[in-house]
View (cartoon, rainbow, N blue to C red):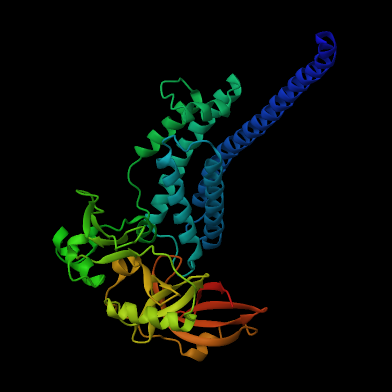
Length: 444
């Protein structure tokens, strides 16, 4: 009996054993194939990064080599600098450097990209490069040469020693900081060099992009936890604020704020509100309750949003867009100052469509940008601004608005909403210069 059973099981087990070996071999081959593909992608991105940083250095040199009055070539050179810097940033993002301190170099490349873009998009025939901007270009030319040589040094070692990027990924993932890795050490050296560069004058348009929103920007006195508790109770229409808990965030930093939480009876999650410490201004509110079946129309929800904002100290707000799902509608609103829409002062409010209650508010932009503005008077009449538009653009609506242009400047515009090629657009025409400042494609 056992002999017969063995005669049956032995071939079966043999086939199973052979199958297991074959399956393991296939898995090993597939794993190796994936590793080789990843290694090839890392190597390509690294060598492309070295090449594009070198080309960036050359393009900066070309831009500086021509006559200071060669605005056309300056524009071409700066556009190429922006393109090459963007390529380099993209290649850095493809490398396994998430856990490696390379932020200074990435920030440096980001500022070069923004400087070159913002300089190239302006009218250089009317506003040519200034002496300060030429000085910045010369500094960038020297610094990019230093970075390029450092990267080529790492590249030479990678090629000479046949180093693998997969080893870098493993070393970073396992946090083996003591591991002697030539690639990691090379990138750390580059980032250290960049961090030691003298501060560069990027100009106001670029500098404004990196200005941090801090409590120092806000008016008013510093509030206490008790102040926030009273404000939160008033916002939530509570007679007794005892159930509200206050937590302080970012103590001793430039980002000090308070978080207030309140859990209603039977609620699974608490209502949350965030306030600035200076001025005690509400920057965020969320009521994560379960929303029932939608019975409120979008138009009624829009009115509910306007009533909610007016009731809580956000007067003269106008809804400009909305996003609706099965249970809520989110409205983006901006300030309306004397008939001009102030786009920098925007906020969003979420309305529950089961009863029209406001269950969310995001007002950080409004808090930091809200102020009384002395708006310029338009130099162009409406008809003159319309003459700038494509003749095939069919205007459906017109509105005055204040927007941030590509240079980070606030500009007064005629805002035209209309159709062309069966697509709905918003086109902003500068009310002073007649330049088309921005265009947005809109959902119907």
